[in-house]
Amino acid sequence: MTTLKIAARNILRNLRRSLMTVSAIAVGAMALLLFGGFTSHIFVALETQNVTRSGHLAVFRNGYFKYGVGNPASYGIDNYQAVLALIGNDPVLKPMINVVTPTINLFGIAGNFEAQASKTFFGLGVVPADYNKMRRWNEHHLDYDPVAASNRINEQDESHGFIGVGLARMLGLCEALHLGDCPKGEGGDQPAAGAISGPATRDFSALEGEAKESASGAPNGGEPQSAPRLDLLAATAAGAPNVVNFYVDKAISQGVKEYDDALVVMNFNLAQRLLYGRGEKKAVGIVVQLHRTEDIPVARARLERLIRENHLDLETKELNELQPFYKQAVGMFVAIFSFISVVMAVIVLFTVVNTMSMSVMERTQEIGTLRALGVKKKGITLQFILEGAILGVIGATLGIILGYLASYGVNHAGLTWHPPGQSHPTNLIVRTRGVEHLIFEIWLGLCAMATVAAWIPARRAARMKIVDALGHV
Image (cartoon, rainbow, N blue to C red):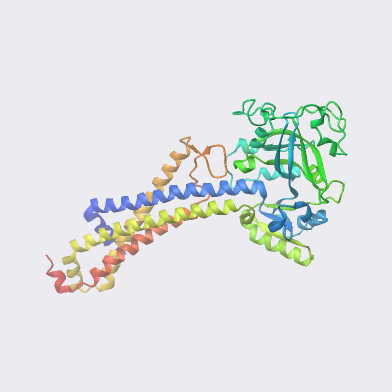
């Protein structure tokens, strides 16, 4: 305790130099907290965005992930209802699962014959109630996002769904869907050269035998539809062309141009009818969304065990494999944060080494006197190390406090930016809740770095010969 008190008093002997050292450590702590909190918010935002889209885990038929994307009908899961029941009722998985739902992925051609426009599309067939429940997943309690929350699919009519904004523009639905930045006469609204007018243009509709539509445009003789209509054409599992009517409730930006230009989100039953026609109805994938992301390893191990025990021809994929962009973005920000951490650590190291070296030079005779009075080498070393540690504790603590204040200012300044994978701006947030472990690591790391930095001049001071130290001028 006496050594600690002496070390604390020695810091005050050259107050200006100690303040400069503490300031350098505090700035480093504040910078790391701000960037660490910002990076942490990006991680949870990306995680939330991807989990609400594709869940934590997915089950496919063996080979689909490598070869089946181009021909999803051939990789359908037989008797998928039994697989859903097996997963949903498992006593180990059930407490962890938020949603388990079948999906259909398919490719085809979407046609709007009112505008004489057509475009290839990527279709996603979902169970509306499950899809809407997945969109509400928010493990990290992020701020309410009105844009994401509005991306609900119609649960009442299976012929309704939504499409990407780019696809809507190309199919001439700008006016019908009230899209901005999409004047009439552009994209799909422009007249096609040599276009054929009249009833003959609806040749896709002639392929569909099941959809008996009245002259008013109402499917199956029901109420007239106010939503714009598309004809979706795809090849069935048997290779025959098939077509269904699809009504577009709205166009939603997906954040990625490739998705915006091709995505069609439709009812699972409609997607099954389009992909399998009158044949056996299957699911292309089974998506599992968990309550907590940290349960992925346990849930995946259990899923794979169930598959082995029941001799199912299935494979599992997790979030990082389903969304490679998420993994790449996390890796990039981790690399940037690591680089900044190294730079800050080097700055703290040289600052403390410089301060303690100056202190050793100024106190050489004092060191010689202490050694002559019987203080051992390790006593001298311990005293200088304690001085460095005290500087580190004060600087890191001050930096954390300043970092919190700066975070509050940033979070309430109304700053916005475009995060990766999102087309609309969002608030710039520095996360301060849920990152306590990161803050403690920053504090502990800077304290440790200051202590290690003090050890270098402390070791030199302890090795001084008593006679040389006493005679130092």
